[in-house]
Length: 264
Image (cartoon, rainbow, N blue to C red; front, side):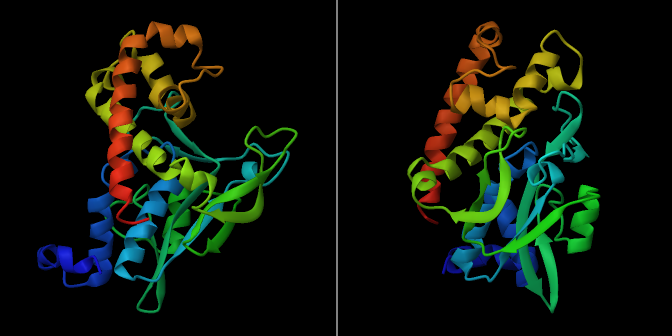
């Protein structure tokens, strides 16, 4: 039991173990949940591994916007970006996932992306996402991510209704550590370069395009590739800062790979 290693903090936080688990997740997961653009499945899976180490029963609750399960839909979950790093000021999610726990006969959602101060009821959780139409799945915590099928109109495919565990290819290629390292690096980026996000500068638009869209940030730092926005010309223009944060990402990745060995 990991609890024996951290009991000294318990009395300083609360005598309620339910609240204690929430605070403990904040301690272990900071700062990766502060980047709201993506990798909720990686942050939530690490949170699940932490709870498993405590022997805490829980599930995962998944929500899908119509764009992820309907061929003709473009409807996503859209929320104001609290960090103001998104190019259009909005977070755009096709899906989201959090932890679901029972306490005193009621169900509560642990979702540090949406509320890092307290657990939420399912109704409060849904209200915060302002989703008008959605699909909800409550699944075993071992399910890491979902399968998709080819789509005529969706680049990322459509949700099949099936999930897979963190084993095989995703385990061998360190998807979990990579996702956590990306989020930590993104937080470092927008905090270190905060002047360009608070004020309009010649670099503001490009920096928001880079870090304000998780697919772009992963494309450049994690994959060292190009896409429609992160072109060769864009990356040449910002070669110096990209090289700086690519190194930071690699250092974060190495640290996360080591840290996760305790839980995997």
